[in-house]
Every structure is written in structure tokens, then in C-alpha cells.
Image 1 (tube, rainbow, N blue to C red):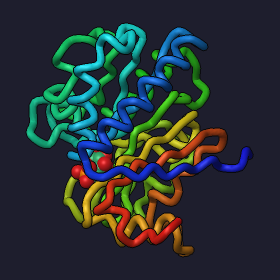
Image 2 (tube, rainbow, N blue to C red; image 1 turned 90 degrees about the horizontal axis):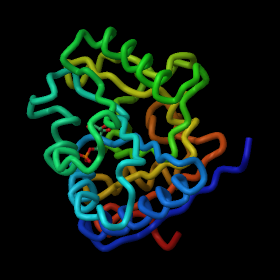
Image 3 (cartoon, rainbow, N blue to C red; image 1 turned 120 degrees about the vertical axis):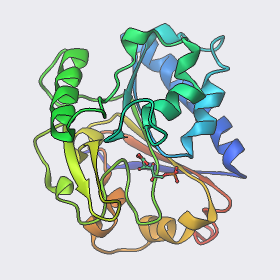
Image 4 (tube, rainbow, N blue to C red; image 1 turned 30 degrees about the vertical axis):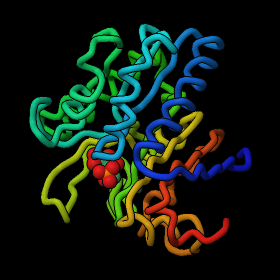
Length: 246
Ligand code: 6PG
């Protein structure tokens, strides 16, 4: 197990976070495309990534989007045109611009029964990566909830125990709904993880995750420990107020 490489990138605000994460993503893509001819990215859901995706939409002259393979870290159990859909959010912010070829966009079919959607996505990953080994994303983008969840891995969830599947369906008690999510096994196989954390409501949790000891299952984001990958935290000033001079 390689020592985990963790970096914290401090930025002023959400717009600066989008700009810095975008620049680093483009460099990562450049290296991946040069090394392997492709760049495989798992997108985060929620609201923080919107500005990053909108910025990516203006970078067609800086990268070969035709070499990008775009996946999703998780999805709500809704149709792709539903207001809660992560696919809809990413489409409206970026993918609908058509720079990434449609066949390179791998959507989680949230409109299906969540167990069926998880099983079908696992098959999509096996086909896209050409292997039954755990898929290794070049980068997984992740957000963090104030409760310490990431992707759709929520505190004390049974999904945290899933050690074989690449994708799983999970009942989220606090939301009263099912979600479909990449498992820890898949997320920890990523070659790079970018956490995008902005806003004062994340400050206490960010301090707990980065500086406090404690039960990992209570803060699933702590369980993201890529076994051979680098973790970069992009945090804005409002989220970093309790970090001290780290
Ligand atoms: C989702 C995301 C989720 C998100 C966090 C942070 O589907 O909502 O996967 O893990 O990243 O809840 O969301 P915000 O960026 O909106 O704060």
C-alpha cells in the first residue's frame, strides 16, 4: 500500500475552486491521454461541481474531449430529466454542449429499479474498462456533505461494507430514497481523487475529516483512501475556517 499522497489546495471561493480544479483536471487529462490515449473521469453530483463543469465547457481548445470517457460517481433514483438527477446537472452545465461524444458518456440509469440500475452500471464499467478487475478511474471527483457522506455513501450505511461490487444500490434513511453509487472498492482504486468542498456549512466536518481521529464509518469521506492514488482537497476559504494553519 503506497503511502497516501494528500494535498490541500486553498482557494478564495467557489469560482476560484472551479478554475483551479479545472486547470488541474486538464493537466491530468493531458498526461492520461499522452500515456494511454484516454482519460476516464467519474463526475461528482450535487451543486458544488456545477461551476467546474461550466468551466470545462469552455475548455475545448485546451483538451481533446473526444478522448475523455465520462462516468458518474453516483446517481439519484430518478429519470435523467428529473430536477434531482446528477446526469441532468452535468448535462445542463457541460455535457449537452456535445464536446464529449455521446458514446463516451456513461450514464447511471436512475430511472430503473435501483438494484437493476446498479447491476447494469457495473456491466457498463466492465465493458468500458474492458476488464472484470476493479475499474481504475484516472480521477474521481467527489463532494462532501456536512454529514460526511461522499458520492452516495452515507454515514453507517450498509453500502460501506460492500467489498466486492463496483456499484451498489443503497437506501438512504435520512432522505427516504434509494441511490446508486460507486462503492469504496471502486473509489479507492482511483488513480486520483479530487474533493471539491466549498461553503461554511462544510467547515466543521472538513476539520473533523482532516484533523480529528474517530470512527470512519461515521464520516464515510474518511474511508476514501485510494490504495495507489493521490487525494487532492480543493477547499474554499469558507470551508477552511476551522482548519488552522495546516
Ligand atoms: C450527490 C453527491 C453528493 C454531493 C454532496 C455535496 O449526489 O449529491 O454525490 O455526495 O457531492 O452531497 O453536495 P454539494 O456539492 O451540493 O454540497
